[in-house]
Length: 278
Image 1 (cartoon, rainbow, N blue to C red):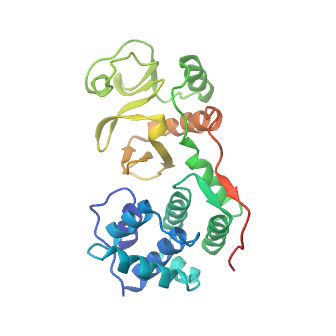
Image 2 (image 1 turned 60 degrees about the vertical axis):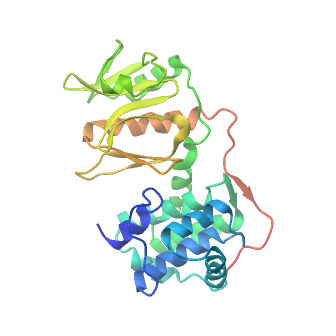
């Protein structure tokens, strides 16, 4: 686990080691955090709470003054890129910045411009920002019509798993508090590993068996490593990992679900007023 991973995981896991001002890579990453949080020239309660996790032990007034001081200077994008040398780390960094920018569901023009500049410096391609913002589209999905959920499941043709219609028992079923029967269950080698419900999914994650509501998923990541296949990131800061490569089809389900089932939930609002910084 690198210091970069420590930083990027702070948004999901407050037990990670805090960053150290004065360390070149840490300073660059802290500057990125500050510029995303302070791009609208205000620090709200949630942002201040997160900064206190990253830099524990600081007086809130002193911390706000430090943020204002750092935010008054241009962000050194080259230093941030140097601190995130691999493509995987740069995608993580862009996703992190996008999550911070859209934490209130309102993407300011200054925030969008910062994300675009970051993606250009990282050389992630012209559609990188749109891609990470689409990944954030899960917010707003509540209960899904069971017929629609079955339709999505059939459309993605997830042939590497077994699709079951019968009732299930055991820890996956027990994790769902209302005791409802799942719309469908997903099995590997005759063992149920995921159950899909109108309100969310229950699964055997690397972190333990858990139920997560669709509405609580902030974003999700396809992870082509031995340690994970897909990771779900929740509003309360949990990261839940599915580790078998055959389970990557759940990302296709989420692509369809969050792309078509958001109902009246708005896309991120972009405020085009104000001056976009250089």
